[in-house]
Image 1 (cartoon, helix red, strand yellow):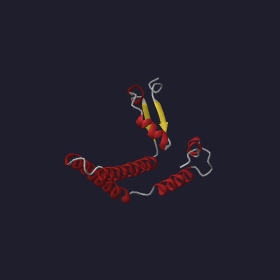
Image 2 (image 1 turned 135 degrees about the vertical axis):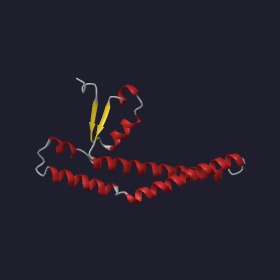
Image 3 (image 1 turned 30 degrees about the vertical axis):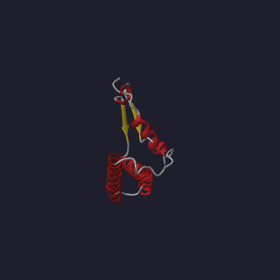
Image 4 (image 1 turned 180 degrees about the vertical axis):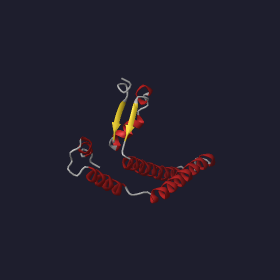
Length: 136
């Protein structure tokens, strides 16, 4: 009975994981459990790092463009925009350095596919069949 009130998500696709993580409804968040293969967690984290790095890069470009377009708006605004751009650039470079040490997303996908094939070559287990629905 204790498990009846909890929702389990096993190896959710990345878009579903994003959806679950962005859900702020406290009633459901506390009753949610996400279970995934370690290689899937690594895939999720690499994907999220790439997404964050791209957003920081876009923020830097937008801030510098805004600064260039509004250069005569005052020193305080320029200083704030310059500081924001510098922080975005620094964080983006830091993430890029971290990502250089991690495997590429495509390598992770292929590793997961190979692990599943090695674990169940005849494709008899329900778990193995359930992973086939994922289109990386």
